[in-house]
Image (cartoon, rainbow, N blue to C red; front, side, top):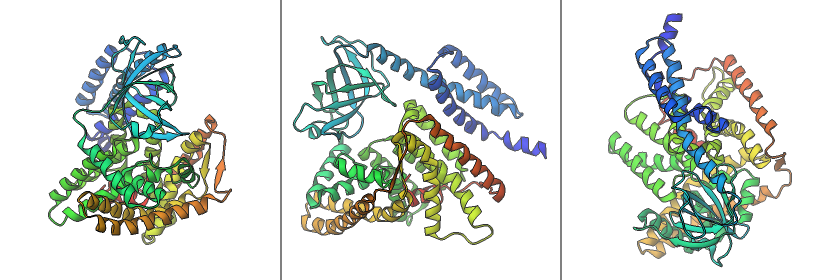
Length: 509
C-alpha cells in the first residue's frame, strides 16, 4: 500500500505542480525577507541543481527538489522588484523630482481628483537628467490641477509629473500627491481596441437617459468604474457588490459560455478557438487587471482541458494560475484584488464541494439556487479575513445581494453591447429600442441596492489592518478539515469546462 502511494505521488505530472506551489512560496519568502540572504548567482545554481535532482531521482524526494526549485525561482523573480522598491525609497522625500510612467489602468475620480496608476517608472532630476532606468514597480498619483481631469488622461498614455516623491503603500512603490504635469503623450500608433472601447462607451452613455444606469451597465460590460460616482461606489461597497463592477471571472464566464453555445454547434475546435478569440478581445478592450488575470488564466486552462479531453484537479488550476500570474508580475502578491480573487476561487473549488457533501450526504444533487447559495457562502467565507483587514467592515447581506443582483448581469451585458454596437453601425432607432430594457434592468438593480444600503445594520464595522484578523483563517481551515474528514469527500479531477466556469457564473469571483 505504501509503495503504491509513493508511486502515485512520484508521478512526473506532480513535479510541475510542486514547482508552481514552490514558486508562490518563494515569492512570499522573498517579500517577507525583503530580498536578503541570497544572491542571484547562488539562486541560479541552486535552481539548476534542484531541477537536475528532480529529473534524475525516481523516489519521493524528487517532489521535494521540485518544490525547492520553485521556491528559488519565485525568490529570484521577486528580487528585481524589491531592488526597484529600494531604489524608489532612496529618492523618496526629496523636495522635487520628475517621474515618468505609463498609465496602466483606467483613471478614476477620488474626492474630485483623478487617481492614476503608473507602471514602467523612470526618475529624473528637475533639470531632466535621468536618475534611474525603467523600474518594474507601480506608483500612485493623485492629480487635481486640471478642470477636466478624467478626460485628460487615458489608459496607455505616457505622462511626466514633477513633485515630491513619497513612500508608497500596498503594492505601490511610490506616491505623488497633486504634482505638476510636465508632459502627456498618447500612444503611437493608437490602440484600436482602446479606441473601440472609448467609442462604445460614448455611444452607450448617450443612449441611456439615467447616468447611474449607464455607468453601472458599463461597469458590468467592460469593468469600468470611472463613470460611477463616489456615492454609488460607496453604496455598492455597503451591500458587498463592489466586485460586480470589476471585470472578473463572472464576466469572462458569461462571454465564454455564449461563445461555446455559438461556435459549439460547428465543432469542438471551433468552440475552443472562438472562445479563446473572444477572451483575448475582451482582455484587449478591458485591460488586464489582477482579478481578470486570474480569471483569464483559469478560463484558458479550463478551455484547454476540455478541448484536449483532459481532467484538471482544482489544485492544479489554483497552483498554475497563481504561479503564472506571479511570474508575469510578482508585485500582485500584495494586490488586494489578486488576493480576493484567489481567496474566493479557493473557497469555490475546495470549501463549496465539502459543504455540499456535508449538507447532501447520499442524497440528490442540490438545486441550482441551493448550489448558488453554498458557492456564494464559501467564497464570502474565504474572503472574509482579507476584506475585514483591508476595509474594516463586511456586509451582512453580501451573499443575499449577490444572489439577487448577479442573475440580471448577463442580460444587461448582452443588451448594452448590442445597443452600443448597433449605434456604432448607424442604426440609432434600433439601438435606442435595445437600450430601453438594458436601462430598465440596470435601474432595477440600482434601486434594489439603494433600498438595502439604507439599512444601518447591513454593514458591520471592525478595526482595519489588525493583524489578529488573520487568525480567523485558523478556525476556518480547521472546520474545512473536520468536514472533509466527516464527509470523506474525494476531490476527483473535474472537467474544468463544466465546473470551474460554471462556478464563476454562479458567483462573481
